Image 1 (spheres, rainbow, N blue to C red):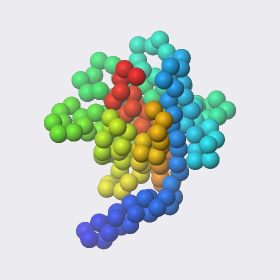
Image 2 (cartoon, rainbow, N blue to C red):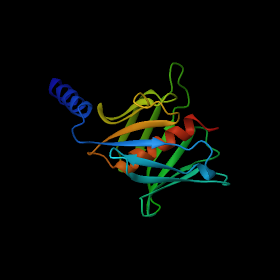
Image 3 (cartoon, rainbow, N blue to C red):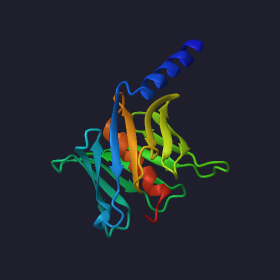
Length: 182
């Protein structure tokens, strides 16, 4: 038990030092048609394009590489008791489901259920873009606005131990559910 706790603590410290972490900057355009925007890597290069599909009944975001190839899709699930969004891979297979807890009196709770059986939990302040995503107590991603002064810009640090596209898609889904009118 103590060894597990020590290993989690060491993994979290390594994450905080930036070891094995890829950094991205997400900057949404406030008035762009269809909510299209880019996710840039730490060098400032476009890494992924988020293509928000306008005029659809379900909120849909296609995530593409810089060459326009789809790597993932995030889509709302209407008519559900719990607010949720599905994440699909490039071939249209569901790889994860992002859900908001039905009842949470003290704070918002979110969970990312992966099709491979793994589950990621979201901890922190989702509304202010200050939260972490963890698997079994080990930090796999961190979302933060603290390094940016520009509105609707925030950073996402993603561990190399997880699929980047899935984690970025989950952050997009959480943002869309937490800020539905934007």
